[in-house]
Length: 613
Image (cartoon, rainbow, N blue to C red; front, side):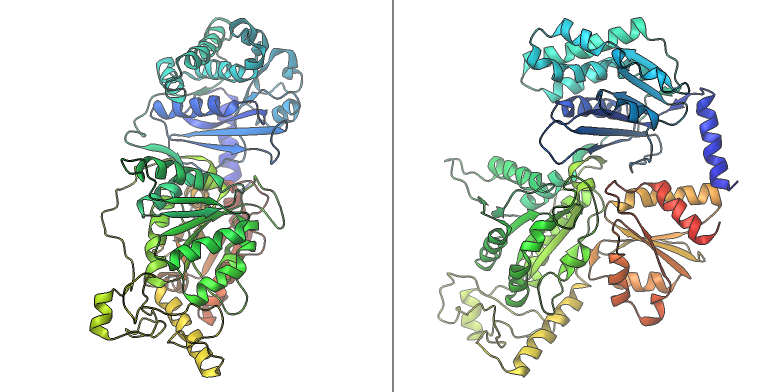
């Protein structure tokens, strides 16, 4: 038996022996989409957080409006791990249609809470069963039948909190915060929590090993989702024009942005100093963004894979005419409609080369919610500095789920508006050529519409042009423009966020990952070290074009595993295009693309198999 298998067996044996498992397990809440379970799940998550225990929450929901199964997983980890675990040890089975299947996948020694009429104990004799009369308890405290399915969820919070040892006063604070300024709603929901708590205290003897005990690892931390963080980054960056078309899982980026704009960008007289436009489709949305960027506004849109596909032609215009704008792509599973509510990292290649012809876009790759804020903010400076569309590539896992984070730092640097000439500049210079490389950085100067100077005007063309922005089909003009754009892209390597590197001299193996894969990657590195004695280095990419550190990292190792959530090894493909030829043979791939967030054990097992350990 391999060392890792022995370790897993030992862990399972400990749990089967009912030894205490403190602050290190996952809870899976199985409900029905549209049943109102989101509030109850949030309260339980934040209650564990309030106990000082590192926690993360992941929602697995169907793409229809209501009626199909949904699962919400809460992971408590005393070591601060936040990636999805392959299996959850504690199950709250509130959906009769999936209850049998859900209880059958519990690991031995696990726990299940369920409506007593389901009698799930008949399917497993190696898990702890807690039957609860949810329906009777709900009816006793909620006379209105139409509200019962909502209140029922809060009863499970009380039951689980009592059995796990979560402080009821902390749960109360969570319920109060969830229903702030709605006293009657609070009274009803906290009444349900207390009913569940009291039932568990009086009727359910503790027979499982799982406990939540107070820690001090969440002080000063916040809980936020990546889409809200992107919205905050955009507002702090000075966005004034938002054009979009709704699409899962990016819609809440614009909703969060809009809420903040309404709060902070309205004059005392009530006049909005921003514009949010829901366009007829994604093609129109990016057209508005680039038009606003050309006019001098800081502008953005948010979308997902199908919307990115529709934005291809305008993205090419932005690249060729050199128009600033920010596009947040919250990735989901494709092709076509794909799995709209499942996560992936499969838009990297399509985004990097979006358009026809020779096009390369700058793509920023946040790996956590703090970076969703920081890199979205940075995207606006880069868009105007480089005079080009900048893409921020998040994903459903990062964007729509709750993550614990350090508070975001208030930006203090002035905005970088890039090379913008004023009327005074034009008086001094006597004029300018819009696309001429004056400074050797391949970036021309621009003026903004409305600049009052006879030399300020220029044409913006999607067709062939020379460095004076005049129409041209001369081969030397076209190749000159294309070569300059290529140099500008190379220059971007020095401007984009550098990768995060964890390295010790002498390690032969390295890993490369990006985005939300980082959560599982960090945990997997710990598993490899503790269970197999493998010491490996790690580089997390934060932008394309790749910074010079990436080439140096690959050169320093015998083998480099590129871990990503797509079928076609898209990151490895980009690396192969970028690296020196002799380095390409060092790359190996670990791929995950089933729509579920990647977990650490998957990475560990794939590496062990490939290395023959």
